[in-house]
Image (cartoon, rainbow, N blue to C red):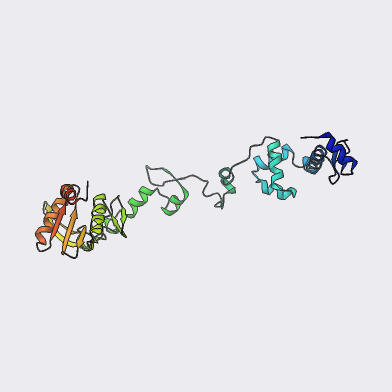
Length: 284
């Protein structure tokens, strides 16, 4: 709180003096707070006055809006700071562009000769679909669908043509399901498999997940022969036994499993479904 007596006492002792405006201030300070604020405003206004004529509203509209110059480019021309240009844009209520608007058209980093800004259409008869420049350039001036049709017009050109059974690229490989659950450095494809793996680990039973596959050849109907492979889920080395975990049977999967049992009768395999897993305590 302001105490007049202490101020008068300090003034008598030479610790206080009068400002130009007449207020008592400390002997070390030059001006009071009011005078300091007035001087700062005066110096700042005097600094900005040299840009008032250059950075006019007409000039900024022409450069920033019409010619789409950036604030840094305008600042380099005038030899000032970009924040000064921003200050004048705000003063004249000129909307500042965002990054997306700035990097459009010629200002884009990928702009060369305007090829990406042009419109391209598929040259196939009856199509005329509008396509982008990369699709037009890579697809021989055609859309994606017509490019694929032309590429594989002759079925012999297709990489999967004629490659069935053992010659197929997917023969003996693990089928990629949508569901992937990682457990103990293995990628499993159902929650039942993960719970059974945890059950085996808890009871200190050594196990391997899908270590082997077995080739199968059987007839699927109408004289067609299918060449495929069957991969059981778990292998228990201690009992030399394979375990298949099933939540439910698909028709093709049941047929595949029946043919596996016929062709490999010496291999011991057990199917565990929900009731069996509940008896073991895997499922609650």
